Image 1 (cartoon, rainbow, N blue to C red):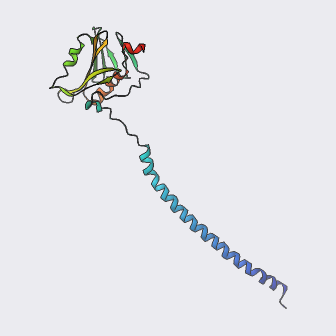
Image 2: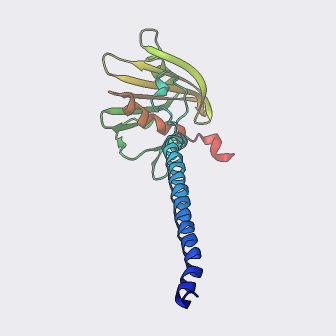
Image 3: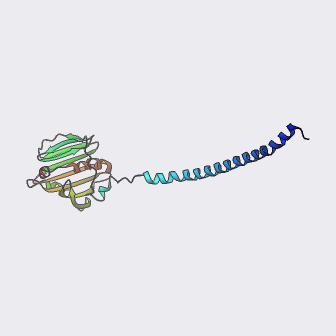
Length: 208
């Protein structure tokens, strides 16, 4: 008769081997599933930058597009801008633009760096616009709404590296014309001052 301790060893030896095999099988499955999961995760992550880049890259408008299309609208977020009055017309200018004193009460003059802006409200202000609306000077011409009233506008270039914008509004106030002329060494300089034109408030608009 086998010894009792031998019987016990034989009874428990079978399940012990089975447990070892089962444990190894479980480990193999875990390793295989982990490797597959890592590959899937890496594959997914590799596609994220391309998708995200395309999704978050904004399309910014060209602030100098007005040179090709003078009536092109521009931003008029005038929070923190300084207000100025020319008789019954109001205009706000962005930070960094300073007013230049002139003796003529029918005009406002501004400067920002090397760029200048001149506004004239008078019955003869139309003549100021025609000085720049000439075949030898005008680059592009258009008519459209600027600041709430129909206006004529031109882009022009004088000499080398000297850009400009001019516009005129008929009957801006009591039959008088409003003309603005902006000039600068670069398109960006002119663009910065030109933004102020889209803050203009004419007398009739204030009563609407």
